[in-house]
Amino acid sequence: MCGAGAAADPEGMTTTQSLPAPVGAAENSAQYSLLKILGIWASVTAPMAVLAFVVVPAIIPRTSLHPGIVYWIAIVVGMMWQFVVSLAVLRHELGGLQWAAVKKRIWLNLPRDPRTDRPRRRLFVWAIPAIAANVLGGYLAIRLDTAWTDWLPALREPSYVRIEGLADPQFQGQWWILGLALVSLVFNYLLGEELLFRGVLLPRMAGVFGRWDWVANTVLFGLYHVHKIWFWPSMIASSFGYAWAAKRFRSLWMGVIVHGVEGYFIVLVVAVLAGWYP
Image 1: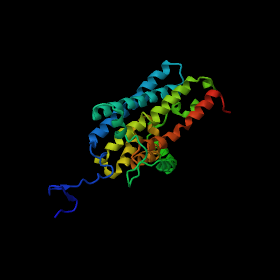
Image 2 (image 1 turned 30 degrees about the horizontal axis):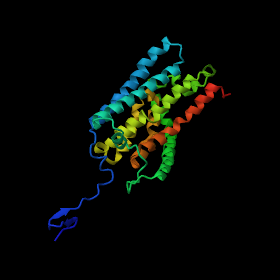
Image 3 (image 1 turned 90 degrees about the vertical axis):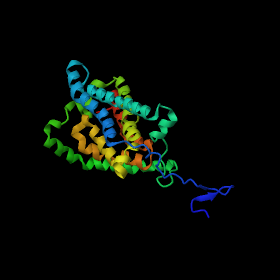
Image 4 (image 1 turned 135 degrees about the vertical axis):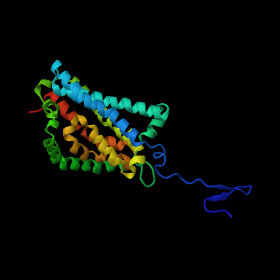
């Protein structure tokens, strides 16, 4: 008599029926160690610190460019480096960069139903509460930013890093800055930060952090912003939606959309370059 989960073959032998793999089993098959997670994180965080606190102050006195533009270019270089690190990690891990394997590895797919694992376009609607949570978290943490920098005054932001400092008539007609803004957008919200943190790291963090991997991912993401260390509290508090949405629906596109709403700054850049401001 055959037990549960077995069936008789034509010759009277039994073969065990294969059961469907648990949802997310493939993603959990090759998890990173804590050392590897921190190593990849450090490989993109340390360059940002060097660029922001060594390279930028050294260049500013030696160029006619606005200090804010120098800082912006340096940060874009740092985000481009994240893309290089991501490709290197994926190539080593996958034995190459075959598109089908890369897409599966970084969750570059439609959001998947957490219960059925089926891709569903309508799940994109969950980006809305994730965005709202980020906005609320950032708002509530503003006072923490003030307390943080009051405690350590040396961490207060330099005046040239403030985005409002770029709303200056001297930039009117300098349309090359729009190119810089577009490159910044691509590497901030897709090929740089999102690819590395939600595409490379997040799918491999459950082995260390379990169900709270998205929380750990958010904290690492916030601390990576050492080039904005004065905003660390609000940076962390306003970023939980990125990792939660990407992990919950196992889709990099969710993180890209939730993070990418910040891309409205392109409109402000165009307004400055065209002189459309009071």
